[in-house]
Length: 88
Image 1 (cartoon, rainbow, N blue to C red):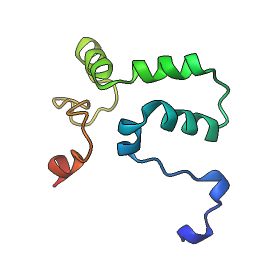
Image 2 (tube, rainbow, N blue to C red):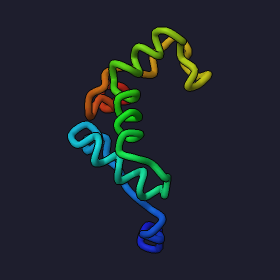
Image 3 (cartoon, rainbow, N blue to C red):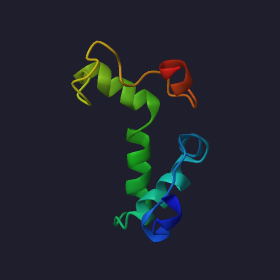
């Protein structure tokens, strides 16, 4: 039952929020997780996690995320709501 969840240990993050306000949303996630970090570390993490950076890593090293669907790229579109096209 979601009403009984401890709100101090639960945070909902929407992909659309990460796209719209990447640095601040990710900073909130880091703070919520109680991970010690500096703004420059968060900035570096955000830069290393951009769609183009992730696509480049996947292109260079292959898909290491999962053994499932090896022929298919994990980093596909980098756009909000693409799950509808993928799973729909």
